Amino acid sequence: MADGKLVEKAVLKTLVPPNALNAENFQELAGKAFVEDIPAGKTIFKLGDLDRKTTYLLEGQVEMTSEDGQVQIINGGTDVAKHPLANLQPRKHTAKAKSACRITRFDSDLLDILLTWDQLSGIEVSEIQVEEDNADDGDWMTKILQSRAFLQVPPANIQAMFMRIQEVPMSKGETVLKQGDDGDYYYIIKNGKAKVTRASKTGSELTLATLKDGDAFGEEALLSEAKRNATVTMDTDGTLMRLSKEDFNALLKEPMLSWLDLEEAQEMVRNGAKWLDVRLESEHANTGINGSDNIPLFMLRLKVDSLDVNTPYIVYCDTGRRSSAAAFLLSERGFQAYCLKGGLMEQAPAEDA
Image (cartoon, rainbow, N blue to C red; front, side):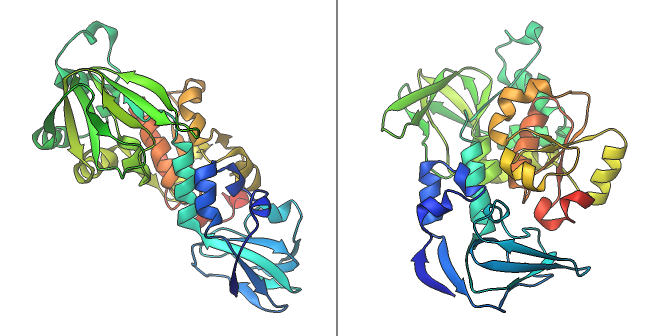
């Protein structure tokens, strides 16, 4: 049982993927990572459990028994123990303490949200790309309709978006959204300019980008259900068009995201699609699907040109949260991208995928 003692941060820093979190998010997780002392012979979790917990062995020995009776012994302090114990859900193994041992476990969704927030800490901007011949058109609606981002959105949804989107006049120096706030709207600049900034660890302000007519921003906090990762401030007077979170999800997010179960995904791969793991390299090395490419979500913008726009990609992570954000970003850029429904945690072991 948890005795109220937190895992030492130095120990937590050795675990994958918590060791990849930035300082702020690591602190958030560290405050919820309690030590549990488990007596020999006690079951930690059972085959078929759906506990949504990420569990690590810190000390002692754990016996892992699969559905077909195969047994694996895991020792605390080894490289294997740096990764979660049989993290797929429902559980594909029974874990029993072979000796008195010490574990920690925390909410899987919390860890995934923190990882998603970390990996989406790039510029929260998606430039609406149009053909050069039409780029000087000042009509923001024309830019929207000509952009690759909206090719997959049904005309009825586009019409509904134009009916529901709100025009908001803004003044120079006015804050549009603030780092750390909850996501509530998706924005498109109708006219004017704005700057994207982020507060550094030292408290100084770092300018990340300048936005202009036709630039869209704010979608990533809506996709990941995380906090805003940057502040956007008007550089000039201007006008923004904003779409509520509810309308964004219904009219844009859902049409631009396609979900596949494992069988459907495997069939697409047999027909030429590729798996794309958007988790961290260390996560991919431990539980990646055989033959899949790996581009962590935070690197996707930088490496998107290395992908073939003519190849369908099936994007996956542990839960579907990071992969949905990645698939949306790929769809905005004209890729045919799909998400693995439920992520790896709800699938058969990776080597069978």
